Length: 217
Image (cartoon, rainbow, N blue to C red; front, top):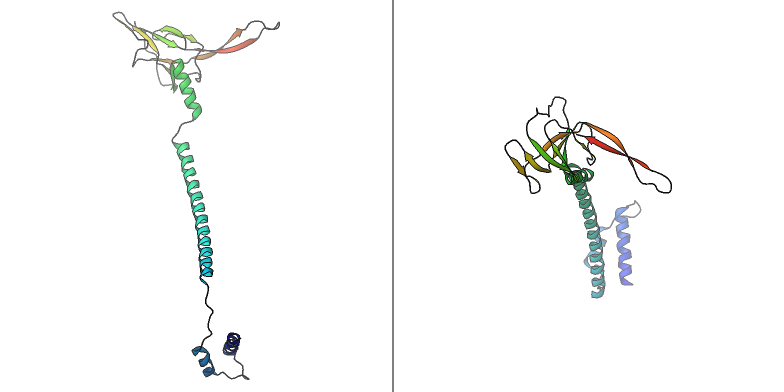
């Protein structure tokens, strides 16, 4: 009760200082006894202090975890953006890799389209080479034309490198590979694609016709 009376008198004096009026004069000396004998605050139990510290620690911990999550998300977004840029700039297309692997298994590599100013065919020479395209073998010389069915992923006027050379020959010598000659290739150009009809056996009284493309080199 004494504490309440002291707090009430202190509140009245503060109110009179903040909002002075002409009817109530200001008496500063009356505040001195209150300031000399301030109200006593009851002591806080140690358990309450521990509870306060625990609550404060949990709140700070939760706030720090949210900041870490947000920072991790931002770092993940930046890393994903960098990965997208590196993939779009550095790594080639998967389809192109599949086509190159399929062409290498058959025995050739596509260089690119032929420039009109280029003259890839040399005059005839008394040399020959045996190349393998798929499961077929062809004996070729300068200016020869062959028909094959295994060329894929190439168009007309595309330059090819046939890298499966089994044999080289001339007037004086013949070189045979085991089974392929290293560091040897035959350059060719695709002249045209010609459709070819193939008939399959009769099934249920019907004959199916499937067109196939044939490349002329």
